Length: 99
Image 1: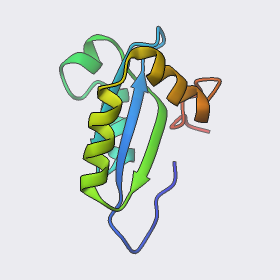
Image 2: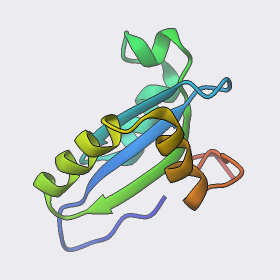
Image 3: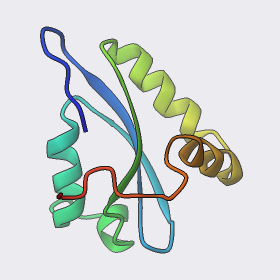
Image 4: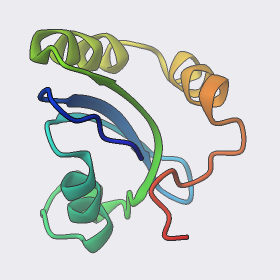
């Protein structure tokens, strides 16, 4: 994960479970949000389905653009979401994995 300096960053991201159940979200702190998903800190869908792998993200300095991208991705059918992920991350690697 990379973080730019000098301007506020917003991220739209897709998390996955080992069985590839997907969750799309938006945040202004990707590192913190991914940690929350990985640790199960927030009850609900992502904790219930063990969604703990960051498989896609895009960054912008415009919150409106981030929210619009999130809505667009959420509106896609599953095959289109998979194609979006595999265009950037064909092996479905955890982009937030500890090295």
